[in-house]
Image (cartoon, rainbow, N blue to C red; front, side, top):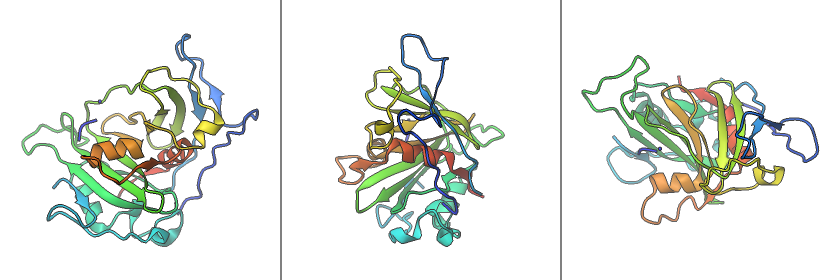
Length: 253
């Protein structure tokens, strides 16, 4: 896998013509439209494949009751919608595990994918090795067949070219960019309508200083975790949902 709430939901005020959350960044190249900035709010205090009733002996059963995974206190014992076994699998990687504290209603964890560092690999004080360790947590709304994932890697990351970009400030991981559209590197400013409707190739740029973390949309998650034309994750979240999720990131303790 190499890739180069209780919390009240955040509302990204994006009505066209209003002031509020979108500020043009002047630092973008003059030949490109500059990305927009989305203000942050503090988050509230989420071996290969731990998956729902699939694959190997590492499989762990996960509840599919969508009412149990939402922005309320009913899932306090399952941080980020993760079962205790899934939490243990992630913690075994030896790095800080970032999980969303704001999960859109109806989404549950359907897969936890982990890849540890090689046994004898040299590791940094933060637990990272070259290109590792890595994990991906895939969330799915079964009714909509819509997915998103939170991913982490120890290194080997680079810039992601996209047609549209919006700057996002997070309390935990600093500033990153929300990206979507064609892979042409134009980084145009998205409209309010675009931010509020599902978009192709949706993800955030890698955030942090190692390990690195990001949110990816349904098509990216499907390609990474469900090979061979899987019927799962045919739809994706909206950019505004991705912003809310990214700004809610907290550490799994």
